[in-house]
Length: 328
Image 1 (cartoon, rainbow, N blue to C red):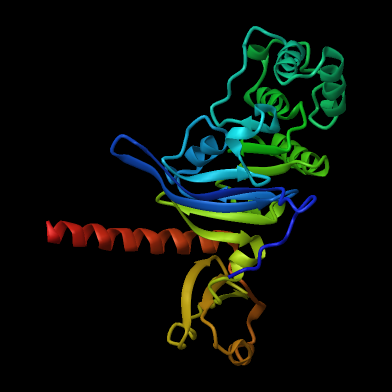
Image 2: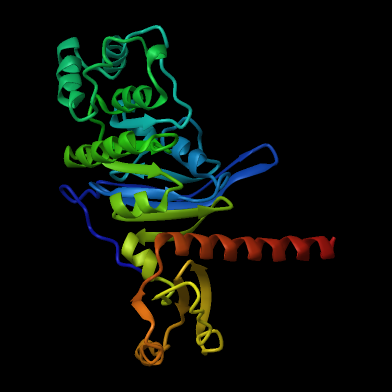
């Protein structure tokens, strides 16, 4: 098990703890057993398939929903006891007033979070360049593209500089330009001192931005820790071999003990190497071929871990369901 870092202020651990929460909606068990720790100042990615319980978990943190079991704390106090302004939330379903201008919208949300008009305008000016807002603030929301409206929604969630920010699929539907803007905005928010949780299906974004990750599937936490730690947890490694041309073919490793083919795209082949497999021996083999352009051994990507964990958990769930059907 990975050691957990000790983030504290005066002996108080300034971190978010979700402690084995459970939440159902009638017969549907949306969250079965989710747990995680996001230390103060961390950026945590929450990943998992559609319907795995990510959004429900976020709403439990924000007290939009209440857990049926377990508890959630920030800085060792239940989230129920923190003022709402402690947190910021960007929901996946965006919600702005379409007939208000961007500036009026942001001033409104700033005032709701306790900012004076002067303080709200100061924060808007602070973010104006970072989010490329100059031409948007005096337009009505319904005149803006989805990406530009999303910038306003993001700023409405963080204008009051909350200690904890929760972003539900912040990159959904964004073009490459706005995706870059949002990545930089998340980095800047982190520099300002916020602890950040965000969900995403883009594993490369999570690897790029996050220092920690929590993988949820079927309403349960199945992997948790630093991004590097989660990548290493299986003990397996990934071998990438790139050939000179797609006509060369490559099947020498298919029968090698402890080696499992993952995929092959064009001239690049990938294999999973179980612990104990001698990568140097494989290198000597392929070097004899004289047609290998690239040979790389690394730990699995976050996407590889995601697919492996979700597939394994789904198989286990199928076995349990089949067993229950036989018993009945």
